[in-house]
Image (cartoon, rainbow, N blue to C red; front, side, top):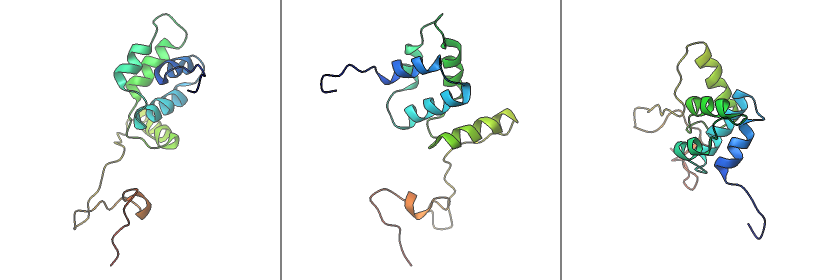
Length: 117
């Protein structure tokens, strides 16, 4: 980056594993996956066994779901899973016309206006 030394997303993620709590790290993991900054395999490869945060990093990968679109969604999913309530992020519910009924007009495609009646 213009002469600045930076670390990769997987390396930064692993560094954060030693500083963040579980829910925060899973939210970070979800965001990294959702935004396409890294893959599960790349994150797994960044774990340094025996280093601070290695166990938390492994747990966060197991709990991660890149379909989550926000930290709040991740935290809610984790709390529901702790109560044995299974949720799947971003499931489209289709209406009678085959369109996603659970999306607001702002979510219907970034460059596409919703159809009007």
